[in-house]
Image (cartoon, rainbow, N blue to C red; front, side, top):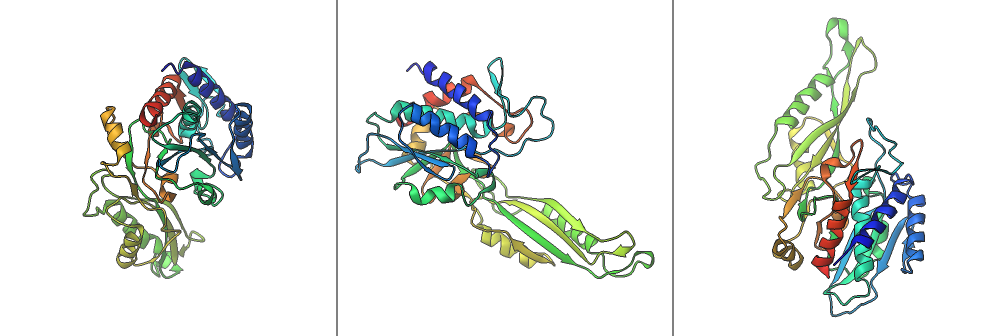
Length: 349
């Protein structure tokens, strides 16, 4: 089908959203604009905080229900932007702006797909849901939306995957480690330096390789990202704290990794939470099989999304590239949006 009209509308809507700052927990303006667009198009919706849900017109209890989900929030602009991140800028076929790739492209492409299919008899009941606070896994994001959704059988999350089905994604666990030493005078080299103990642990974390490697997600990854110690130059620090970002795979649960670290580090190890585990969908699931039949290649995703909160089978499939996310001069192309709309319609229509 000719989706030129829908692609143009998607691009114009995305320009509007880029121009309204919607950093996590500050999405009201963007949600207001999206609701105004839905009202203008005559599309019924429900709003919960800054989360929005629309259901297709053709509904049957005999059909499975498919959720199309994308998030409306963005991270804060990275350093290095050479353009105003909140001014949509077209250069050739590229639309620059914060959130254009992550995941505005998926958000507007899924909305246009919903507009095309909402009155059609398709193999699925279709639900379109926009979530807030995805970038911070906030309580007022998908977690707030979840109780208001109908029974969902499968979901597509519009994160940027180059329009290849990401059939698994890594989980996330953040741990805070406290290393104890013993204070003393630096001139006499007294005490036990907690920084030195922490350095040894951090180096061990950097080099450690877990035995099991995921077929779709590869190795687990542990990265130390924050460290803090000391009170003044001439005192041996008796405490050092550091934070580790851990990306788990389907080979290990977050709880298993936490217990392992508590046993192997001479320190106090606390997880901020353990509920954001790795998620996956079977390669023989009908929607994955359809992707493969259409020539798409299943991949694994290293990044976390609202998928982690979904209790049903789900996969990522969206326009743009993950490598552009959270970067300066983020962009999406008009061709990527057009391809996404056509792909979604062919996949679920």
